Length: 259
Image (cartoon, rainbow, N blue to C red; front, top):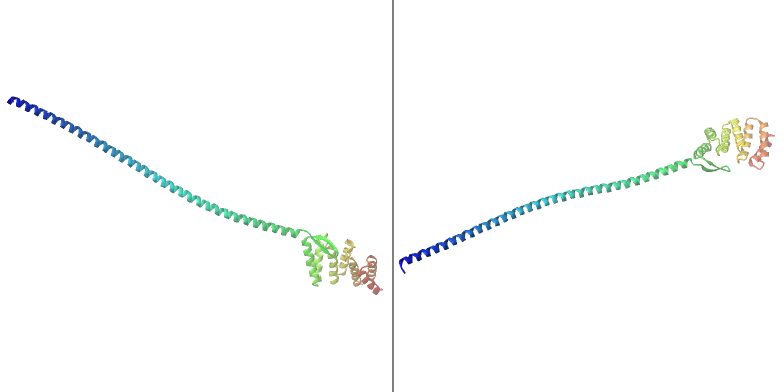
């Protein structure tokens, strides 16, 4: 081969090498560029992922904070409800106690009213063979006056019985009160007033069990007043009006002594 040919071959070989080298260099640049782009994409994805995670974390954190706040609010409401329930229970218990106290007071008041009414309700009285209704106050006053009479304090008994007769003109006690008033006056030697009250008894209740004794007592007063004629007439009337009475028998004996 000639020198010229060798040179041509060498140049051709060099050109081919240079072309191959240029191609290799071009391919390395593309690869490097692709790698860079890939790295950028990976980095962008990583940043996007980190941002998303950060947003998610923030969101979760905020939701947790809100949930905690809601739980605290709910706990506060529960505690408030418990307090209110306890208060209501306490109020219910107090209300129950108040109702029980009111019921007790109502019962006491009702009992008190009944007791007071009973003090004013007429009571059945049996006295000297008669039965009648009397106010409790009448019974109390009559019994008190008779208690004084039984003690022998005839002056005080006279005052008490006279006051009773004056204040209770329609009382069933009146005939008996007049009888004992006359006896109290006889004991204090108030014979004229005694006669007046014995006669009031006879005028009001001539059939009263004490009537014969009242006639005899009138005669005794007349004897004390030295009015023998009137006493004799009274004793005769006693025998005629009440012939079967013990007072009539005693009157006959006294009449015999007057003759």
